[in-house]
Image (cartoon, rainbow, N blue to C red):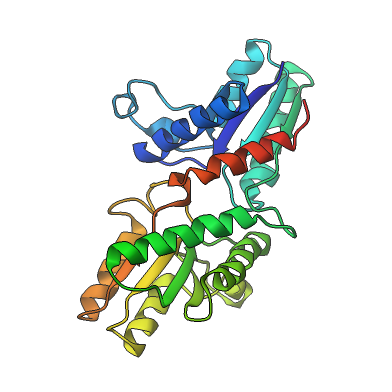
Length: 274
Protein backbone atom coordinates (compact mmCIF):
# COMPACT_ATOMS: atom_id res chain seq x y z
CA UNK A 1 0.00 0.00 0.00
CA UNK A 2 1.39 3.39 -0.96
CA UNK A 3 1.72 6.33 1.41
CA UNK A 4 0.92 9.71 -0.16
CA UNK A 5 2.58 12.86 1.13
CA UNK A 6 1.59 16.36 0.06
CA UNK A 7 4.79 18.34 0.55
CA UNK A 8 5.58 22.03 0.69
CA UNK A 9 8.75 23.91 1.53
CA UNK A 10 7.53 24.80 5.00
CA UNK A 11 7.15 28.00 6.97
CA UNK A 12 7.42 29.23 10.52
CA UNK A 13 3.93 30.73 10.19
CA UNK A 14 0.97 28.66 11.29
CA UNK A 15 -1.21 29.84 8.40
CA UNK A 16 1.01 28.01 5.93
CA UNK A 17 0.80 24.67 7.73
CA UNK A 18 -2.95 25.00 8.26
CA UNK A 19 -3.38 25.64 4.54
CA UNK A 20 -1.24 22.59 3.72
CA UNK A 21 -3.51 20.50 5.95
CA UNK A 22 -6.64 21.85 4.26
CA UNK A 23 -5.25 21.03 0.83
CA UNK A 24 -4.19 17.54 1.92
CA UNK A 25 -7.66 16.84 3.31
CA UNK A 26 -9.35 17.99 0.10
CA UNK A 27 -6.94 16.02 -2.06
CA UNK A 28 -7.61 12.93 0.05
CA UNK A 29 -11.35 13.35 -0.52
CA UNK A 30 -10.87 13.57 -4.29
CA UNK A 31 -8.31 10.77 -4.47
CA UNK A 32 -10.10 8.38 -2.12
CA UNK A 33 -6.83 7.74 -0.28
CA UNK A 34 -5.21 9.24 2.81
CA UNK A 35 -2.84 12.14 2.12
CA UNK A 36 -0.36 13.25 4.77
CA UNK A 37 0.57 16.97 4.91
CA UNK A 38 4.34 17.26 5.37
CA UNK A 39 6.65 20.26 5.11
CA UNK A 40 10.26 19.81 4.11
CA UNK A 41 11.60 22.19 6.76
CA UNK A 42 10.79 24.98 9.23
CA UNK A 43 7.21 24.08 10.22
CA UNK A 44 8.23 22.01 13.23
CA UNK A 45 9.23 25.30 14.88
CA UNK A 46 5.59 26.45 15.06
CA UNK A 47 4.12 26.05 18.57
CA UNK A 48 1.57 23.24 18.59
CA UNK A 49 -1.04 25.44 20.25
CA UNK A 50 -1.17 27.48 17.04
CA UNK A 51 -1.83 24.31 15.03
CA UNK A 52 -4.87 22.95 16.86
CA UNK A 53 -2.47 21.17 19.25
CA UNK A 54 -1.12 19.01 16.42
CA UNK A 55 2.59 19.65 15.80
CA UNK A 56 3.59 20.00 12.16
CA UNK A 57 5.35 17.14 10.40
CA UNK A 58 8.62 17.79 8.59
CA UNK A 59 10.02 15.49 5.96
CA UNK A 60 13.00 13.71 7.49
CA UNK A 61 11.36 12.88 10.86
CA UNK A 62 8.07 11.95 9.18
CA UNK A 63 9.75 9.63 6.69
CA UNK A 64 11.81 8.08 9.49
CA UNK A 65 8.67 7.44 11.53
CA UNK A 66 6.76 5.95 8.59
CA UNK A 67 9.66 3.67 7.68
CA UNK A 68 9.89 2.53 11.29
CA UNK A 69 6.18 1.68 11.10
CA UNK A 70 6.82 -0.51 8.06
CA UNK A 71 5.85 1.73 5.13
CA UNK A 72 8.00 1.12 2.05
CA UNK A 73 6.16 2.76 -0.87
CA UNK A 74 5.88 6.56 -0.90
CA UNK A 75 4.41 9.03 -3.38
CA UNK A 76 5.27 12.70 -2.93
CA UNK A 77 2.94 15.31 -4.45
CA UNK A 78 4.85 18.62 -4.57
CA UNK A 79 3.28 21.96 -3.72
CA UNK A 80 5.95 23.61 -5.84
CA UNK A 81 5.47 25.49 -9.09
CA UNK A 82 8.77 24.35 -10.63
CA UNK A 83 11.77 22.04 -10.17
CA UNK A 84 13.11 23.51 -6.95
CA UNK A 85 16.31 22.16 -5.46
CA UNK A 86 14.14 21.02 -2.58
CA UNK A 87 12.78 18.39 -4.98
CA UNK A 88 15.92 17.63 -6.97
CA UNK A 89 18.43 17.61 -4.09
CA UNK A 90 16.97 17.78 -0.58
CA UNK A 91 14.38 15.02 -0.99
CA UNK A 92 16.73 12.53 -2.72
CA UNK A 93 19.53 13.25 -0.22
CA UNK A 94 17.17 12.71 2.72
CA UNK A 95 15.86 9.48 1.21
CA UNK A 96 19.39 8.21 0.60
CA UNK A 97 20.37 8.84 4.21
CA UNK A 98 17.35 6.91 5.46
CA UNK A 99 18.06 4.04 3.08
CA UNK A 100 21.28 3.47 4.99
CA UNK A 101 19.24 3.02 8.17
CA UNK A 102 16.18 1.15 6.88
CA UNK A 103 17.25 -0.52 3.67
CA UNK A 104 15.70 0.01 0.22
CA UNK A 105 12.28 1.59 -0.16
CA UNK A 106 10.31 3.10 -3.02
CA UNK A 107 9.87 6.87 -3.27
CA UNK A 108 8.31 8.51 -6.30
CA UNK A 109 7.85 12.24 -6.83
CA UNK A 110 4.86 13.39 -8.88
CA UNK A 111 5.40 16.26 -11.34
CA UNK A 112 5.43 19.78 -9.96
CA UNK A 113 2.45 22.11 -10.50
CA UNK A 114 3.68 23.62 -13.78
CA UNK A 115 6.01 21.12 -15.46
CA UNK A 116 7.62 22.53 -18.58
CA UNK A 117 7.56 22.46 -21.55
CA UNK A 118 3.84 21.65 -21.47
CA UNK A 119 3.12 23.85 -18.45
CA UNK A 120 -0.31 23.98 -16.80
CA UNK A 121 -3.06 26.06 -18.46
CA UNK A 122 -5.26 25.65 -15.38
CA UNK A 123 -2.75 27.66 -13.37
CA UNK A 124 -3.06 30.45 -15.92
CA UNK A 125 -6.80 30.42 -15.42
CA UNK A 126 -6.43 30.55 -11.62
CA UNK A 127 -4.16 33.59 -11.91
CA UNK A 128 -6.52 35.28 -14.38
CA UNK A 129 -9.54 34.72 -12.15
CA UNK A 130 -7.64 36.15 -9.20
CA UNK A 131 -6.64 39.24 -11.19
CA UNK A 132 -10.23 39.80 -12.30
CA UNK A 133 -11.53 39.28 -8.75
CA UNK A 134 -8.98 41.75 -7.38
CA UNK A 135 -9.89 44.35 -10.00
CA UNK A 136 -13.56 43.96 -9.13
CA UNK A 137 -12.89 44.51 -5.43
CA UNK A 138 -10.66 47.50 -6.22
CA UNK A 139 -13.38 48.99 -8.40
CA UNK A 140 -10.97 49.59 -11.27
CA UNK A 141 -10.36 47.58 -14.44
CA UNK A 142 -7.08 45.70 -14.54
CA UNK A 143 -4.70 47.49 -16.89
CA UNK A 144 -1.36 47.00 -15.12
CA UNK A 145 -0.53 43.58 -13.72
CA UNK A 146 2.70 42.29 -12.19
CA UNK A 147 3.14 38.54 -11.82
CA UNK A 148 5.40 38.13 -8.80
CA UNK A 149 7.06 35.07 -7.31
CA UNK A 150 9.62 34.53 -4.58
CA UNK A 151 12.63 34.36 -6.89
CA UNK A 152 15.00 31.44 -7.42
CA UNK A 153 18.68 30.91 -8.24
CA UNK A 154 17.56 28.23 -10.71
CA UNK A 155 16.69 29.35 -14.27
CA UNK A 156 14.28 26.44 -14.69
CA UNK A 157 12.12 27.76 -11.86
CA UNK A 158 12.09 31.28 -13.29
CA UNK A 159 11.09 29.76 -16.64
CA UNK A 160 7.84 28.63 -15.03
CA UNK A 161 6.94 32.20 -14.09
CA UNK A 162 7.83 33.34 -17.60
CA UNK A 163 5.62 30.65 -19.14
CA UNK A 164 2.71 31.67 -16.91
CA UNK A 165 3.26 35.38 -17.55
CA UNK A 166 3.11 34.96 -21.31
CA UNK A 167 -0.10 32.99 -21.13
CA UNK A 168 -1.65 35.27 -18.53
CA UNK A 169 -1.04 38.22 -20.85
CA UNK A 170 -2.85 36.40 -23.67
CA UNK A 171 -5.70 35.45 -21.36
CA UNK A 172 -6.22 39.00 -20.04
CA UNK A 173 -6.05 40.61 -23.47
CA UNK A 174 -4.35 43.53 -25.15
CA UNK A 175 -5.74 46.17 -22.78
CA UNK A 176 -3.75 44.71 -19.89
CA UNK A 177 0.03 45.01 -19.63
CA UNK A 178 1.51 42.08 -17.74
CA UNK A 179 5.02 42.35 -16.30
CA UNK A 180 7.09 40.07 -14.08
CA UNK A 181 9.07 40.58 -10.89
CA UNK A 182 10.69 38.69 -8.05
CA UNK A 183 10.30 39.39 -4.37
CA UNK A 184 14.01 38.80 -3.84
CA UNK A 185 17.01 37.65 -5.86
CA UNK A 186 20.73 37.22 -5.58
CA UNK A 187 22.93 40.10 -6.65
CA UNK A 188 25.05 39.98 -9.79
CA UNK A 189 24.67 39.50 -13.51
CA UNK A 190 24.60 35.71 -13.13
CA UNK A 191 21.10 36.05 -11.67
CA UNK A 192 19.68 38.62 -14.07
CA UNK A 193 17.47 35.88 -15.50
CA UNK A 194 15.28 36.44 -12.43
CA UNK A 195 14.12 39.78 -13.78
CA UNK A 196 13.55 42.95 -11.74
CA UNK A 197 12.95 43.13 -8.04
CA UNK A 198 9.33 43.83 -7.16
CA UNK A 199 10.21 46.93 -5.16
CA UNK A 200 12.22 48.41 -8.04
CA UNK A 201 9.51 47.67 -10.60
CA UNK A 202 6.74 49.13 -8.44
CA UNK A 203 8.74 52.31 -7.95
CA UNK A 204 9.24 52.59 -11.70
CA UNK A 205 5.52 52.06 -12.33
CA UNK A 206 4.62 54.65 -9.69
CA UNK A 207 6.97 57.19 -11.24
CA UNK A 208 5.43 56.51 -14.63
CA UNK A 209 1.80 56.84 -13.48
CA UNK A 210 0.61 57.16 -9.88
CA UNK A 211 -3.06 57.32 -10.72
CA UNK A 212 -3.39 53.87 -12.30
CA UNK A 213 -3.27 51.05 -9.75
CA UNK A 214 -1.22 47.90 -10.14
CA UNK A 215 -2.56 44.43 -9.45
CA UNK A 216 -0.07 41.90 -8.14
CA UNK A 217 -0.80 38.42 -9.46
CA UNK A 218 0.60 36.46 -6.55
CA UNK A 219 2.45 33.31 -7.61
CA UNK A 220 2.52 32.02 -4.05
CA UNK A 221 0.70 29.09 -2.50
CA UNK A 222 0.34 29.92 1.18
CA UNK A 223 0.42 32.90 3.52
CA UNK A 224 3.86 32.45 5.02
CA UNK A 225 6.57 34.95 5.89
CA UNK A 226 6.67 36.35 2.36
CA UNK A 227 3.09 36.48 1.11
CA UNK A 228 1.07 36.57 4.31
CA UNK A 229 -0.38 39.54 6.20
CA UNK A 230 2.46 41.74 7.39
CA UNK A 231 4.90 39.72 5.30
CA UNK A 232 7.68 40.82 3.00
CA UNK A 233 5.45 41.69 0.06
CA UNK A 234 3.06 43.69 2.23
CA UNK A 235 6.05 45.64 3.54
CA UNK A 236 7.30 46.30 0.00
CA UNK A 237 3.87 47.58 -1.03
CA UNK A 238 3.67 49.78 2.06
CA UNK A 239 7.06 51.36 1.39
CA UNK A 240 6.35 52.14 -2.25
CA UNK A 241 2.85 53.50 -1.58
CA UNK A 242 4.16 55.73 1.20
CA UNK A 243 6.80 57.16 -1.12
CA UNK A 244 4.32 57.86 -3.94
CA UNK A 245 1.14 59.54 -2.72
CA UNK A 246 -1.94 58.25 -4.50
CA UNK A 247 -0.28 55.13 -5.89
CA UNK A 248 -2.05 51.88 -5.04
CA UNK A 249 -1.02 48.25 -5.33
CA UNK A 250 -3.61 45.49 -4.93
CA UNK A 251 -2.30 41.96 -4.27
CA UNK A 252 -4.43 39.10 -5.54
CA UNK A 253 -5.44 36.06 -3.50
CA UNK A 254 -2.86 33.28 -3.30
CA UNK A 255 -2.95 30.29 -5.62
CA UNK A 256 -3.41 27.94 -2.68
CA UNK A 257 -6.78 29.51 -1.89
CA UNK A 258 -8.32 28.62 -5.27
CA UNK A 259 -10.48 25.47 -5.37
CA UNK A 260 -9.12 24.62 -8.81
CA UNK A 261 -5.72 23.82 -7.33
CA UNK A 262 -7.04 20.51 -5.99
CA UNK A 263 -7.82 19.28 -9.50
CA UNK A 264 -4.26 20.10 -10.58
CA UNK A 265 -2.87 18.21 -7.58
CA UNK A 266 -5.12 15.26 -8.35
CA UNK A 267 -3.82 15.22 -11.92
CA UNK A 268 -0.26 15.19 -10.64
CA UNK A 269 -1.02 12.35 -8.25
CA UNK A 270 -2.61 10.39 -11.08
CA UNK A 271 0.64 10.70 -13.05
CA UNK A 272 2.12 8.24 -10.56
CA UNK A 273 0.74 4.76 -11.15
CA UNK A 274 -0.13 2.56 -8.22
